Every structure is written in structure tokens, then in C-alpha cells.
Length: 110
Ligand SMILES: [Zn+2]
Image (cartoon, rainbow, N blue to C red; front, side, top):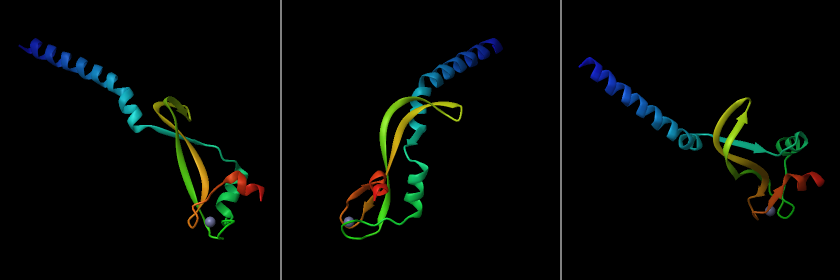
């Protein structure tokens, strides 16, 4: 009787283990997201500490972060490997009046 119960418990644990492994990839992609951006230190300084205005309507520009999906797969951040969706973050400035978008590189030239 006792052996039977242990056997059932053992089978249940094995099934739970298999289900966890099968779902791991699915779960990982659901919760893990990594972001990488291309922004230099000089750009950051210009971006955050200088007030930028629209060339057309002289309105203060607002910061916009745009996510671009790259791929789903394994990633490594600070030595920790995880499975998830990878995004590239594009940062630009937008005028609220005319909706014109300014790239950081464009503003740097002026
Ligand atoms: Zn404008």
C-alpha cells in the first residue's frame, strides 16, 4: 500500500518535471526581454542635458523610445544566460506640434 503511494508520487513528480522542461522555453520567452541601444556618451549628454527645439515651430522636443524586435533566442547579460525576446531600442526626439521626428545624430550636427 505504502509502496504504491510512493510509486504514484514518483510518477507524478516525473510528469511535473517533464512539463516544466517543455514549458521552460515558452515561459522564458514570455517573461524575459532584453534591450540594447546604440547611444554614445556624447549623445546622452546632448540628449538629456540640452533642451532641443523643433526647427519648424520652435516647440520643445519630447524624448521617444522606440522598441524594435530583433529576434527570440538566448541572451547573456552580465554572465546570466536566459531565453527571451531581444529588442533594440531606438531613441529619438519628437515635436508635439508638427510630429516631426529628429534623430540624435541629426541634432548633433547642428
Ligand atoms: Zn515642429
